[in-house]
Length: 326
Figure 1 (cartoon, rainbow, N blue to C red):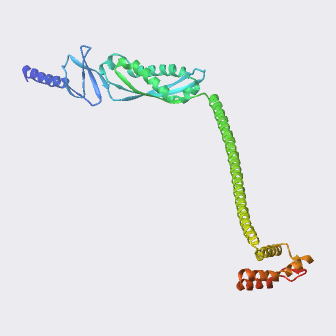
Figure 2: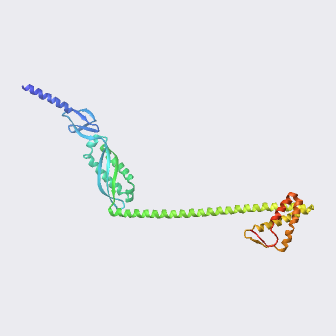
């Protein structure tokens, strides 16, 4: 093989290697920076790209996908001098590969240190109760401060989450006792409130019952009064009718009125539930003898049919003298 042949082969190999060196394939989710003689010139996007071999070279291969980074545990002293242990995570994304490559020497370490510093600053300005109960507010304040601080680096912090906030053991025990006391207090209050409501409802029920009973008595009294009024009116009309008949010379009407009253009085006396034996005075016997006269009065007043009925009633009248009722 002559020297020309060797030169030709070397030249071909050099051309092939130069072509391979000038073709760069950037994977999806990455941006590569290109440096010419050590100075940044441009950024390669995902896909097939060409560079000038021997003059240009790939500087940094930046991951532009969203990434998560752990924030190590650290002790934080709150505003009321309570020491708590805190850790968290941060989510960020590179949107300018050149700045992220050349504006900060160690991007991950820079984000971690910046986040830890601001955790101490934010949580140190809050009381322990606020630290334990306002975690969303802490995350929001951290995100706002850290994102503004890392913006010159060409990255965007999307979220910062505080994972654990661990108070000291003695403080946890005190918090447990406080929580137990609070729950006991609330239970006592609820029990007292329940008893109060029960007494109120019981009193309201008794009040409503008494009101209903009073209304019932009032209604009954009203109806009794109305009944007595109707009875009195009927009695007055009957008396007026008898009086009118007497004024017209009808003595039979007077006799009928007296006999009717007399019989009703005996009937009420006989119907008394406690009355087993009826003692009649001697004068009453003569009055019973006038029942025959009553029949004549009824006959004169109502005719023969009424006379028969009066005779039947006479048969049911108890005999004179001491009488035993069934």
